[in-house]
Amino acid sequence: MYAVIETGGKQYRVEQGLTLQVERLDAEPGATVMLDRVVLVGDGDALNVGAPTVTGASVVATVLGHGRGRKIAVMKYKPKAHYRRKTGHRQAFTTLKIDKIELKK
Image 1 (cartoon, helix red, strand yellow):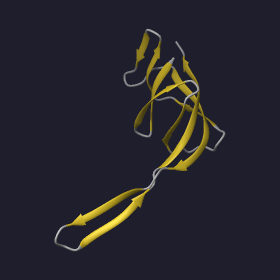
Image 2 (cartoon, rainbow, N blue to C red):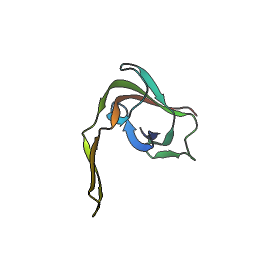
Image 3 (cartoon, rainbow, N blue to C red):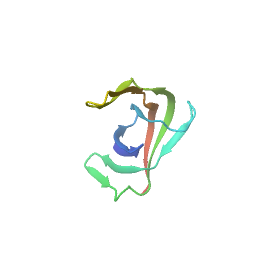
C-alpha cells in the first residue's frame, strides 16, 4: 500500500517503513504526527483519488529529527550600477519515518 501526501506545499509518495525529509514541522523528535492531507491511496489494483483529498485517509509518522539543508548561494546583480549582493540560504527540514497508512471506509 502506498499514498501520496501533501505537506509544506509539496507532494510525496510514501510507503510504510520509508524515511523522508519534508519541510520543517512543529513537532519534537520522537513525537508521532498524523498527516491527513492524503491526495491518493493505492493498494494493489485499487486506487483512491481524492478531490482534493481522500476522506478517511491518514498517514502516521514518527519524527526522527530536524536539520538544515545544504547552503545555496543567492546572487543579486544589476549591470552597470555596481550593485552586487551575495547571500546564502539553508532550508530547514524534518526527517520522518512512515509508520502506517490508514484508510477508513
